[in-house]
Image (cartoon, rainbow, N blue to C red; front, side, top):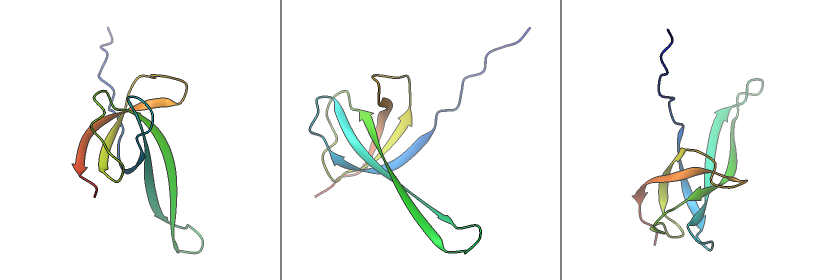
Amino acid sequence: MSTLQPSKKIIKQGLVLHNDLEKTIAVKVENSFSHPKYHKTVSRSKKYLVHDEFSKAKTGDLVEIEQCRPYSKRKHWALKTILVRGK
């Protein structure tokens, strides 16, 4: 008999770019890593559409997002907490 174990949700931190859409924010997540050959620090960024049920996040906030069920074609993340308020 196999038992289902809860899957671990992926959590990321990022900066809110805009909150123009209804119940949706755009979050920019930066990733830094060392290049395997040249040993230089490389930074890449990616933009995620995040579900914000109560429209609490504002532009410039540092937020924590977690992976969840698909809300739409491009929206697979939900707002977990607001870490730091922007200006």
